[in-house]
Image 1 (cartoon, rainbow, N blue to C red):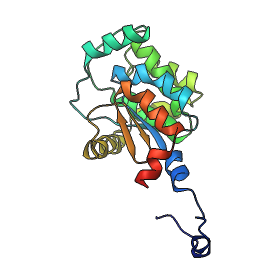
Image 2 (image 1 turned 180 degrees about the horizontal axis):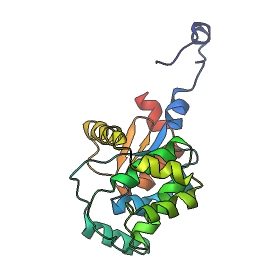
Image 3 (image 1 turned 90 degrees about the vertical axis):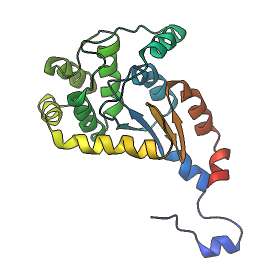
Amino acid sequence: MGIVVSLEARRQGRPRRDHARIERARTAFYFDLADPGTYLAAERVDRLFPGIAWLPASLPGAVPDDEAAAARATALRMPLVWPERHPAPRLAAMRAAAYAAEHGRGASFVLAASRLAFCGGFDLDDPEVLAEAAAAAGVGLRECLRAAGDVARDAAIEAEALRLAAAGADRLPVVRVGRLLFAGEQQVAAASAAWRDPAPLRRRA
């Protein structure tokens, strides 16, 4: 649905709504728990973007660049441990993350899960590991595990990644600020700058 504009306000030269502010508010972090880039970006995203939406997005067969991730972890002074069966999709974990995000616990779940995977080296599709992430995020264990087994969630997660690719994003994670997409963990700072200064959004509105 488009933005409603007051004709009276337009006549007076005062738009009813600030388009740039509306665009700025529409921020989202698209993550893949199988990708170390999500782990490397998640804590900064949580700190820099209050109220951002956390959305799962992944494509079957996508292979992360582990060499680049290791170099970035060193540069960021973050520990990096490769989890069991890496690289491999984390389908159950992504379904559980989708459930957590739907209930406002996406950030907490992703932070806990990514630490378990890339600091502890644990397999996120292990129900016991998922239970640890759910507990840390304050998500009901029974509901979380039920969601993890719900294969019907996979299509929506894949579709999200396809939409990002169609819009020009060539890697995950992605931060969306209004209409702008910042693809890759190294773009978090640029996304934050765009979020703080809505001028580029105003030019695109």
